[in-house]
Amino acid sequence: MLNGDTMNIDVTTPSRRVAHPGAGFTADPLPSLSDADIDALAHAMDTSGFAVLHDVIGAQVLDSMREYVDSELTRRNVEYLGLAGPDWIQDSPLAAFPTSASLQSALTGLYRRAMKEAPAESRIATSIRVLSGGTGAKHSWLFHYDSYVVTALIPLQIPDGRGELPGDLVMYPNLRRVRRRPIFNILEKLVIESPLACRLWKRNAVRRAMSARTMQMRPGNIYFFWGMRSLHANEPCLPTSVRCTALFHFGDPHAGSLLKRLSARHHQARLRRLSRADAK
Ligand SMILES: O=C(O)CCC(=O)C(=O)O
Ligand SMILES: [Fe+2]
Image (cartoon, rainbow, N blue to C red):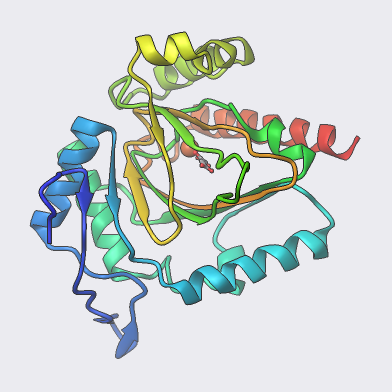
């Protein structure tokens, strides 16, 4: 199952049918992972910044997602699309993912390995990001830490034509520890994610000096990293390209904190400001 390099984990024997309590047997869109597989994922995330499961998303899901994205961009008449919350995914070809027992156990297992305790809640926060047209550039280079300990990123559409720019994910792996006190987390984010700081993080000299990594993403694979510890942002694509990623964030150690809600509001306001600028 492991191909020698701990960063790359090839799951070659997907178990397609997984029991869900009360629902008989339901198709799971992902292969199930053993404890040893999850150990290897965590080890790769600790040492190289990210871990990859290769060729686990089928061509059919990718094709239908491409159609879904095209029709949503047209229907909403937008270039940038960011959908989050539990509802959007139910009407999309990814509907089976939030209830995937394999995904749930991988994310829970990774959280336990990082935090040495069980997560307070088992909710997977699902979102999708589509960058296209001239607006895509405004949503690039937005360095941030995620609000969740574990991030699983599924690239659905990555520009790969001649002369296109793929919009790689640039990451400063494991730059900090998980902040258990919300106040430290928020103050640190205000500084590190500020527009001024982002201008520094994107510079080649800083990237080299601080060993940033560039994740070249290929549809079909899933990429895992410690989102709350690793500062990350995507590079821009060409205005003529479409780039689409689905994000599965898991394990919020600050869930329920008032400060946390204020910080989330600050983040939403930042996105709204960008959307207003898009509309101009
Ligand atoms: O789209 C990407 O490549 C990264 C998005 C991301 O980091 C996020 O939504 O938290
Ligand atoms: Fe992120």
